[in-house]
Figure (cartoon, rainbow, N blue to C red):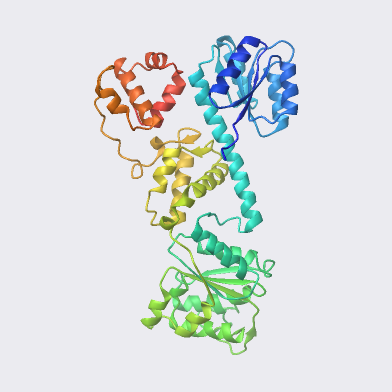
Length: 460
């Protein structure tokens, strides 16, 4: 079933011009509604669901600014102003008031097509993001874990089953795959959600300090122990203790942890009195614990005590289908955090990102997206914005046959429309010796559109 066509409301008190635009939009694949006065446009705006309003700025009675104000009250739609050259300044004021863009008369259909394509794509992206957020909240409740691939769906199914229980879970996976996020989600969806979530990285501390942090210590138990210290296990009372990189835990500490799991009590370093504890333990590692057991670097009894349920997170290279979704979510989140105007990644950028090996997994992808959001030249990240290591090498320029050459059809056959457009623009630029104004006129597009396409196609 094909997707519904985007609806465009055309408002212009020049009836002939309004009807002409409506017919052109129909040919371009949109669903047009035509109003030949501002008042009629407001009626249609109130009664119909439209995606974009294309309105003349200067009209008798209800003008374009009044239409813009009414559209702002309706919500999720965009407004494009049509203006004469003498009213460009007013059109800019309209953009400050919330219009998406403006286009000058006489309307260039190629420029209008490109403009509407960009605006509708942005609308669809925002709506899809909202739908995905709602689906994730409704289906999983794990709103910070993102993935629609089959490996992630299996993880969601297991996580939904074990989250409400007190079972110990071992979360495995490469660095950067999101092990702590899964642990937090298990806690948030458990009966302990109102209790503390206490995390400890076992690889970040030396053995002596790790025991003190984990089990606590009594005053005077070692040099520098000036007072009693409550450890992470006791701090997690009534909640969840998350042991990250548990494979790096020393053997002596492993023995003491096993006692906590089996006896449900902890003895502080330097103390003798057991303290009862009510905690759930989640553990994570990027190592193969069974191999460490074989090498006698990890206790077998602790391994099986931790691995009551196992969740293995796949590396990003094994769920490439999730990369576009992850990228969209990161763009929205990071653009809002840094206050930038970036709204999306161009399709060719998503294609490049989806082809990368990502040894640092989701964490590395997020870091790259953050760089792009902060440094991109425009609202849409293009290939030109990619850092050099990610930027694809430009293909060697092919010699262009003269118009009418027998080789022209062979050159164009089998190519995508985008490739043909790139060749067309390059050939025109060569013909006018790089004069962009002349090239734009010959191509029948505006200079702003040409400049955008030059960036998109990597042409100079």
